[in-house]
Length: 330
Ligand code: ADE
Ligand code: ZN
Image (cartoon, rainbow, N blue to C red; front, top):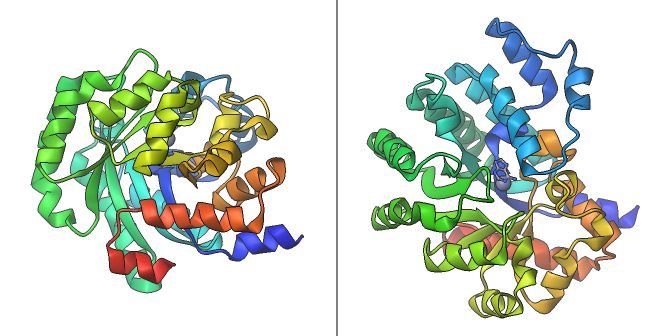
């Protein structure tokens, strides 16, 4: 219909995307075969059928298990190139991509392999198609702050080689019980080093984790943030700051953050003046890339074309690209 073609044709930016969450079952099986890794599933279909989640942790368990097939630079390249093809088909022009080195270094994969494979695909997309991107290295919050510091030390020698891409630091994985304060020191260090910082907060954790991400981590964007509504004063603060929330509608549905897309607070937050954006999070696991996320909210929440355009504009404004880069995307 008309709304579908409008969304499909709209140029978009993606600000909340875990590259490991773009590993489709087909590629996962192909990499397992290439690397001679046995899988506990006998087919692509049976793996996909296992993607029935009840909360964030039930997803993370499968997501980390899936990442085990990623061994070589070529594997990281193939995964990233496949994501870019999907994103370009959805008219995504710019993507800011989370990657979790600890998921890989814990298994004995060198951090250099992770950076090199992802960056190679991103640079090729920039050179061949003008598709721009930013790499956001994320710390796993279920691990210790000490572990995050070790990862930062491992990555810093690579900074000069990836200066064109790696400008961000993020925080993801199991939210409840792992509050922002746990990572206050490492985030202070990252800011001192000149990184742009973001953190997942208020996905299924309390609104207090969102205020703490602002106060203690001094984030420039909040990833998810949908639980902020529990605290009306926080909502006023997010509006006053024009603090971007990178909302992921299909993720929230699949992880039972909302029971029904019609109950999603994205439209209410948008209409209240919060700088919400639409993103796909882990599209291979949650059933859709960018256009599917836009379409799901447009239809369930009866968004107008103006509101769809506002969501896309919010994404450009909240991105980490230069002012001239933003003008080009407008
Ligand atoms: N890692 C990958 N996807 C995530 C999500 N939605 N929340 C927290 N950590 C994640
Ligand atoms: Zn996420």
